[in-house]
Image (cartoon, rainbow over all chains, first blue to last red; front, side, top):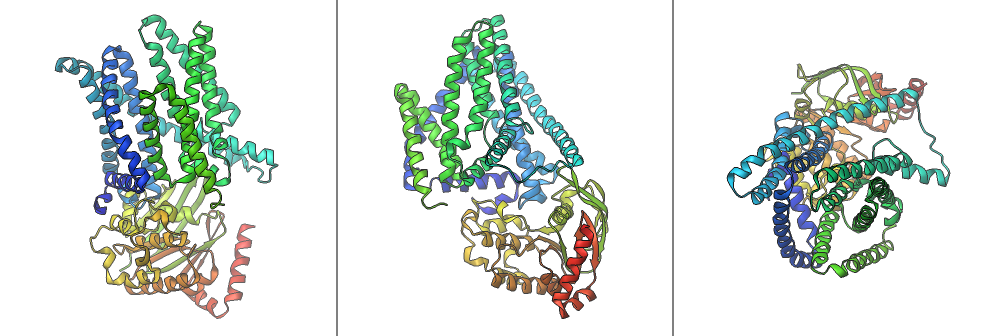
Length: 371
Length: 243
């Protein structure tokens, strides 16, 4: 891919992704893994799309619209953050600061998920008239989700600035000299405020996530009771998993910083796992109150285990590889483990444990040469 | 020909505080402007705002007579700015970084930049990914990228950090020659008074988010005769400004 393509914002990102992918699969072992996992991934994606199409066809339009709104919200938050970085710190700041270039950039990265959503929709409703019936509602929901993301970013920046001004006005410079326990608590609060809700210490974040879990479970139970939809409980559990994964994804920079400080991978991911635990606990408590506690508890425990394994996998990869290479390796590992879990579900936990053990051993070996 | 710039009551906010408060300064001749000051005195915020990387909260910024206060994109396009070396995309090589940074196809090969390119010795690591470079190598690549297309104003924030003494010496000489031959305005934040007196044609002393002192060329040249005395005087002035 010629470097001059990188002069446009989209080209710049694509060039970095292309070079990152090449770097991630530069080793023979990595290429072998890709060779084995690649076809499996394509087959899984095709099957997943067909399944999603079927599920979408069976779901009420309201749920489809909620999903489309979420699909519009999440990527636009990420696009906004990326644009901030490109404007302030990159070699193509002049291009990123131009309104037209930024708009084209946002449009491009929105068209991708939109195209995927529409492809799934067409799979679900192959007849043109059916697609025409659903598409406008989903597009509108997607657009409102995207708009909400940009509005939330703007409002969030305003709130953040006001909080910072208030703190600066108070002259609230914190003490730098802390006891070991105080330092540990400060680091935990820092991780919590950057992983969960911003500007809140660990305890407040735990409470907030428990409340969020309870609200999701209560809302879902209410919807379930009214609609009587078959298989809706599984859909609810999947939604909880997606929300937890999206909210609690630890920033790679923060994760690498903790690992660099000497925290073990397990300790580095302790906060997001604890927040996921609070979310699961809140959901279970709310579900128990409406008489669906046992089912929710087992689903929440499974979700928690899954998130913990994924977080640990991520921390171990980031301990041993450059950032982008780690990102690619994680995706391949997750896909390979998912594929294995579908083909051989009864040994999936063993495979996950085995993979984590191997990575842990690799990281331990590296610690002899990395101070 | 140099491109004049002027700042009128410029304020910049960072982290809820005014990092730069009501700064005014006019530059209408080419030369090397050195800015010294304590940590947190607002040097970096001022330079990043001038280069469009930060918005200004109040005031006006004029470049070449045009009011670009609200147009960060135009400021970023008009001014060469060396990004933090740690922000170079790790997957790309310096050659790719230069190809992306430059608007002109042959910007990398321009004869006027040959001495700087030699002083920075970037040919030795041109095709290595940036995430495999040392901090000094990354700094050298970031510095060179700021001069591609030969913008009339170039801003470098603490450019000699991470550089070994030999490279730093050669780069200072190459920058001085480039400013003189091409009529550039080079604005650098510095942390040593010796470089200010030896290399710069004008100086600014920053303290408490403002300009505490403008140092003219005559004072800098006089400082060359008594570098220790000049440094002591600057430090005293800085202490006084910080209270």
